[in-house]
Length: 408
Image 1 (cartoon, rainbow, N blue to C red):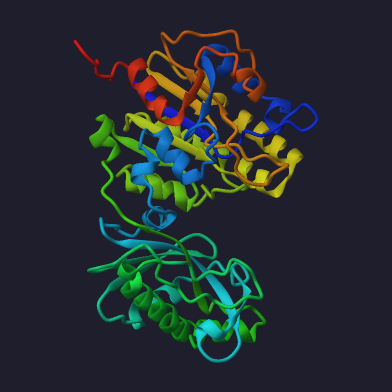
Image 2 (cartoon, helix red, strand yellow):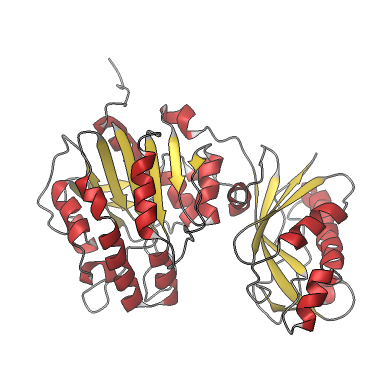
């Protein structure tokens, strides 16, 4: 039996006037799956713990985030296509814009996204080619939009350092500081990299041409989310199943590559509201022919939650419902379908919260319950009751006959 896991990022919400975007949406296909399956609510990490999308996905896939998560940097680097090895340190990176005189650390950030620059590969290549740092190797990798990822490799590297990104415009680039004596070497080389990369970027012909057109220069690399890479068992090593990941966001693709899954890419998988939902669903179904486990990730509801936009979140959930109609036609004697959110992103909070998310499992032999609709207000009545994220894979493995007996 194959497994298809559909994760709708940030789909769950809190009540606004007695309704949520999900509960108020017209979702005949989600409701069909809820009626056919077993339902419950899930704390993706643990009760009261606010999950990030990265830690939530690790937990949902059965990897203890308190053991395997050291920071977002290594995952973003994997998503950007960089080979990350145990002992490397990695960062999330923004191409930004600074103005002023003197050192880069004397200059003020006027835009943390360099005008939301897109076509920056030439700048990535220039930094990799022209910047040299004695004692370490580094790789800068391109990512979507204004984003990139950075990996340092060498002896005596530590992730016990601060960010350089001030996270606000109008403030100076922060000098990276060591949080303990063992990190002083790392802080020094990272600051040297920030300074030298700024020199390369600021005078690059590509940026000079942008300035002539009245566009912001992408002349600084803002670093945050540092983490030290550790050994993570592959998904196939852990479960004996070949995994495919269908996602548009660098983060989720990074988790897939971290677990040595096959990441199926397509320029129409954008990780935003303009993603091709129908193609994603079609690709997920066809991937079941070549893979044992398929993770299908849809991002946009989380974006609308962060924007505080109830109506657009509801409308997009309805678009998802329409697109997943083919999933209701699967042969559930051959495919086990899990439907869930990775966390709650309330429109009233505009950030992730620890509220549990609804989860449904549809599979032959599952004990269907009396839940009629896929909704935060209905799921808690279901037969799964309340589980943690790390319980989900155990339940699925048992349903598909792959669990191992504990005891005689």
